Amino acid sequence: MRVHSGRTPWWLRAWIARSLVFAVLLAGGAYWLGRTQGQAAGAPLPVLGQAPDYTFTNQLGQPVRSAQFSGKVQVVTFLFPYCTTVCPLIAAHLTNFMRQEVLPTDLADRVQLVAFNVDPAHTGPPEMRAFLAQYGWDPHDLHWQYLVGDPQAVRRVVTQGFLVDYRRASGEADRQPLPGDIVPVQPEVENALARRAHVDYDIVHNDVIELVDPQGRIRKFYTSGDTVGPDRLARDVRALLGLNAPGAGHG
Image 1 (cartoon, rainbow, N blue to C red):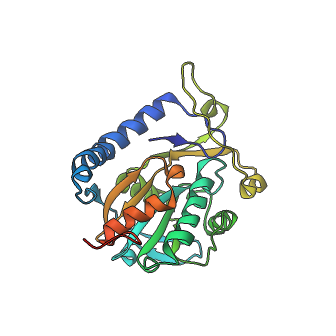
Image 2: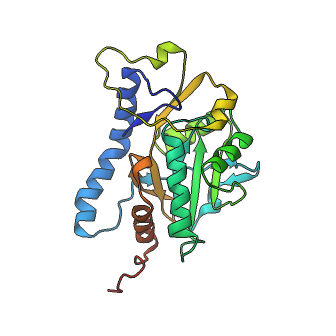
């Protein structure tokens, strides 16, 4: 599971170790066990846990309850509005997914994008709307709900419910690698919102995408969300809905 920062991709070795242990022990083991044993035999995607309940606010300032998504497959991700590395790539990929694989098809009313703002203390609906618009999504289209709330409530839902760790990094001490650290090369993506705000901090977090089934159960972790293509997402979403891929035969 990769970890990235919103701007300059430096982080402390101790935080990486803690984050990886957290994610791998609580989620990765179940994921890989299900993938190697269940999917190899043609079984459905394994149940990895129950998605959390919450009531938050979306990019339009409207209240949103998790129960509203019952009966749909949720594609869940975690975004920092001032990010200049992986978050914009994930947003662009998910926009393409919706335009190519969902909205023109029979999935249009059965798939919900859900993003959680991992900077709830410093950004809210205005920044969330601007972020979505910059990377191709009309923020008034509620097929994508970008959510924010009380920082403690967001942390509980994201870290305990979806098993995604994040932290604020500020100052040069947080941004400099320690001796022996392996620092992955990450893209720098233009973010006009971040440039205008002159932010002096990053949000370091796991860049995952998760699938939640119509019964509210977490069924899949994609551990590098920026590399997941629209066709792969569509295939797994259709599997959770019990649908064949377009053009597939009925067996």
